Length: 201
Picture 1 (cartoon, helix red, strand yellow):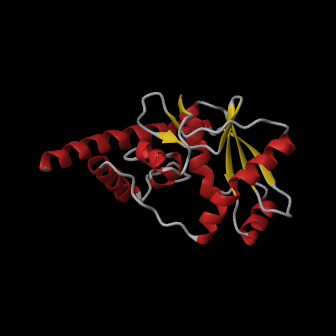
Picture 2 (tube, helix red, strand yellow):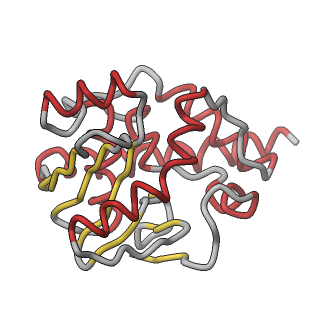
């Protein structure tokens, strides 16, 4: 893996280095939890090809819940460090060795990473009762392990005043093998689409 540690997540520079590259947070737009092609893949590949030509990261809508989650992330990370007795390293992005796709983890630990969610209270309670990795983040967490090469990844859901959900997620090797194939095919198609668009200029 290739770490970029000197760029702060959420900044314009961070967005620019992510432009045009598949990111783990959007791997669900490439492949489903069952390892099948996602119906969102076409729009996603068009988006990334457009970003490559325009040289800018597409603006995305942020709901109240999403903005709140971003604002509480630092508090949640500090809580995780306190409870787990661990020091979490913050990085901008991590590229896979070929720099064709990436992830932006909420933290790194020795031989593992961290994904933090700070959802609304009803969602957090649902996560607590289920006690497992929410399916909405399966591709992101497994994809982050593929990018980094790690065999496990920490997931935490945090809401002040309630117990935190902290899960040690093990790598699903069958799924990440399918994801690797899907990503390589997607990236090759993306390169071809970029070349075609440049030829129209």
